[in-house]
Image (cartoon, rainbow, N blue to C red; front, side):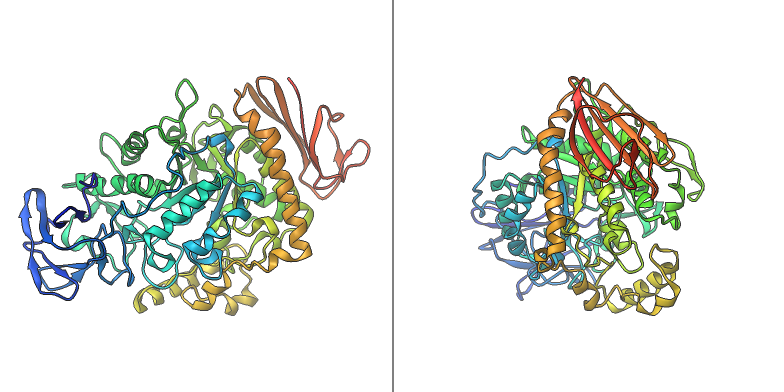
Length: 592
């Protein structure tokens, strides 16, 4: 018997179909192209029907009172896409080759974010699995997949998912995703999935017609808020929380990254985020599972630890503050939200030692306060990066740092974030300095596509990288050409320039594995920084060693604070006697 309340249940005689539809008087079920079968009303607004001889592979739709045929909101597979019939899947069909995998400690993590559809020419789970030996050799330990919940169209980022239990059919069948996770575990790699619970995609979302999915109590940039705290909200909460458990349980994901949790409004006694973390961790049992948030509010309470240092709810947060500081340092860009990150090198020192730069202060560009005190949290509560899907895709042309940052500056910020005690995250292709863009792309119906084009056009002039003289060349987010331009070019990886960058990343990740990660398993005693002109000196004191960084974030040489002490882990070799050269970076370690 399935322990999930949503979706069909396979049993010896057939399949029990069920749908929560309290807003409809009657619901029908259509198997394949057969006759309409009336479903039976059950307590709480449920409709159920037991169909003999149905089983794995059976395709079906629910039929509303007005005759509209819809997929199962808890469909496990949509072989013909979002608006086609749902297919019954037997969760026991796949035989795992790594049944004893229990996960990896968070301190070991080097995260690699990828989009399945753009990671390989084929854009499938199977083709992505073929690249796993490469990723293991690179030195990453965690693969973070951009959202997979079935979304509309032939391409998309995945953040407009509609059927949250069905892996996107364009990438392959559910067993193909399981095989990807299985193969990753065989190579010692964890797999995390990006999930979106702050809104549901607009195209192909029928759930509001038959269930109280939305509430006017809250509003979001996407419209009415999701009903997490209004009348009949319990099953809406269960739909989402059980979905989180489903990915951990049936697909053996090693964790989840929750998108834009600041947009989840909930006035319940136990906030949805707290209940989700509690129930997911309980369901995981003895497996190591990591929960990560994206949170524009920089709320440190989500990241609190118990007396042993274990997360009470969420393991870590994407640290936009450190990204913004590193980006401004390397590029000099101050457009948009980057305007609030010009206090270098002080901002970067604070981000490296305390996590958040803004801990309750007013942000001039934002026009409001942001964040809370975070210095008491371990460095591993923060994920550092210089590129990700958002920060590249939020540029007018989706261009990467390699296109507009000087080589020395880019190497410097790479060396900073890859060896810092915070958890580093790479974006696919970054390691070989890929110049392929990653613009926003989607494929909705004609009406929504036009609205996206118009909205993107209005917003372009405010995005980084916008140049008025090139406005007519901005990519159409709904075109196939834009999607294809985002596909990783693996031939790039073979040229000499890429080889130099790839060796650079491999070297730094090997140093991290051998020297930095052992420190993260100790207790951090103190973290401090000093600045002079454009020079930044940072120290982290652990139980038996001190990790130190000295970097010049400017284009002119500056005096070094003192003689280099301890063993040099890595240096850029651009220093002269007594001076810290432009974009010079030195990492050292010495006994405490």
